[in-house]
Image 1 (cartoon, rainbow over the protein chains, first blue to last red):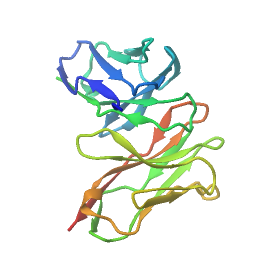
Image 2 (image 1 turned 90 degrees about the vertical axis):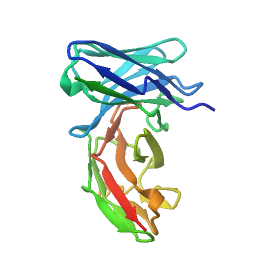
Image 3 (image 1 turned 120 degrees about the vertical axis):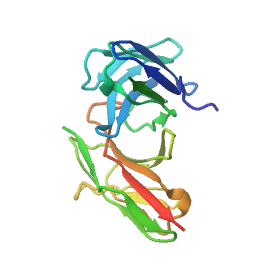
Image 4 (image 1 turned 180 degrees about the horizontal axis):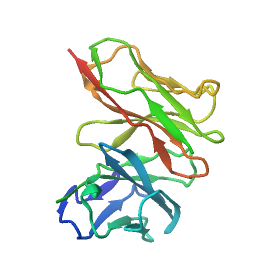
Length: 114
Length: 113
């Protein structure tokens, strides 16, 4: 069974640009969550989608957005990139929408903003 | 709000030494608790979990017990190996947050032969 796939693995962007990251969850999983990992702030929750609906959102500015498609694949978008957006972005998928369900993480997308 | 506090690292041990990584939490209600591990250049892997008070999660020789009275979920292993070198994260499922996880800062473990 394939794991969570995130593409691309690495990205370099310039300040002011926008970027789209992709996440393909494990087959059959309908919940996808996104996290930002930085040395200073650690792992922070961005948002969670379940059956194409955003159910939960973290404390990030509106420049960070996401969506989920009918096949459960998800994308997140960051507009007007800032240097501080440089981070490892992790996607996690879960089978059900309940809080006790195990989350499976992808390898992440390393975004560098220059 | 919900939060997780982990002991700061790095933790440096010799092979076969005993490991403890402390984790305490603050939460509303009864969260599930997790330990995740991150190897260099990788995402997070679930190491173990506990869903209610007094539950003990265990995997690959690692153990942690959900202690509601002390709001703790300390990770232990009796004999570490070089291959256990990684960053360990304690996490809880946020109140009303479905699949929202709140993570601790992470503890880096280095095991030397």
